[in-house]
Length: 569
Image (cartoon, rainbow, N blue to C red; front, side, top):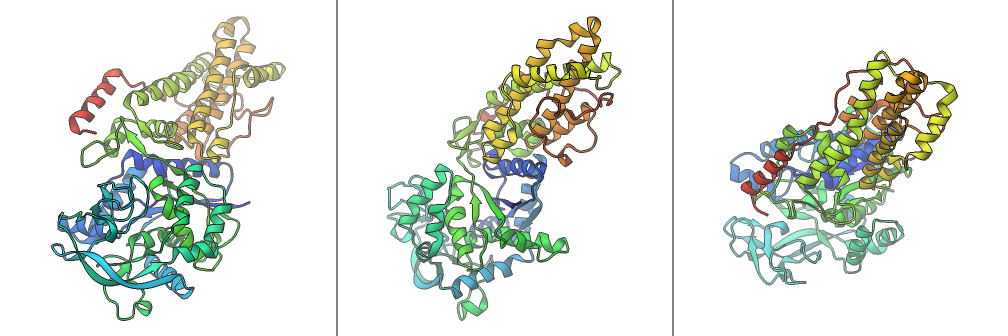
């Protein structure tokens, strides 16, 4: 059986996460990993913070703190957000603190150089005389030389998606101070992407099945690809290896080059800390590993072209990406998230006001899988009140409270004589039933969430149709069998809920009398007549309480009002 190595784009340790980040690269990965693990597959989930680059040095200097202290604070803040929303990594680190990271990044650089995939060039770059530094591409603002967009960054145009050359941009300014930079000569190394494309990366990409948005994006870039700089003149970062740098000083690896290598170095750290220092090779060098990158669409070029080229250029049979489920953008009430305009929802406040599982489920049910989507407060309320509270929560409380009251607080008995009859009614006559794991494995999280709710609708139809409250006095044996069937369906729902709503799934599992942790149990087989029940008759119920309190209208009205008072789109 193949093993699956899952990564999420390393969050940049220069600011807080917002909901768009959460649903773009992390929550879908967590749901996917939980599903694979429940299915019994071997999976490793790797992430950590990206901690180098000009943005970090400027941020730290503006605050008057040391670079390590600055990134440590944001690393902790980002990890706290993940913890709050139940996103769990097997390996977590940071590019400035991982003991293996610098050496691994330098070895990548050496091998690319040895294999003929690096070019050293001396050329002009933009230099800010006021800030006394060469400007990284992302700290250049100006006009796109391809489409004329006036707010393009120096590395890429957000309108046309083309990679840019800052020296060709007709108007430029330093993002930090706003002054016009000058040109100065400096030497740097470039990754020869055209040669890597022609040597095999292009053929690999063309032969691989991709999501349509990925295929279209990279297909357009491959034709006119050019070499990319992989070093910078900076004080903070992974130094260029001394044996390659020679007389060159003050050069570090460009942050976009060393950041994805963090996936490798964090895996190495994880293996060493387990006492198995070579274990990382099983995940990165053996052909039966599947590498899955969860990213937002702005990271498509790096994970579908640049990083695969870096891996291919090692000429050591590194595992290349198997799937890259890139999501589109996630917006807020009709506009893009903007920290500067306060058009955002602070995750810490959101986690305090609402149970994080509710946010998880709404995000997954509205994920931007094939087109941009958005958070809308009224839709969040509808999702919680209708899909969760009315459909799943109400089912659980009315079944379990009735059964607890009239059948001694235990799962009622099941008469074998009517078991198959009830199974056929539930499985064939009360609505469509689907295994949500199939959609999760296809990276269709919206459909999977719909299937989960639809499976609960089936049970509601079943319980209404058979009305155990009407049967209790005139046919108690049948009433018990109906309730037994409903209790066991709730146990199945708890399993299906686990990747989406892990805490609520555990609550429901405990309510029906399930033993142990739901996340440690195997994913259930597709239900079939007479072979799907999980709970033995007589199993005592746990504490029964409504798992999904409804959100009142006035709360949502207050949230919308507060959002507009705090910021503007």
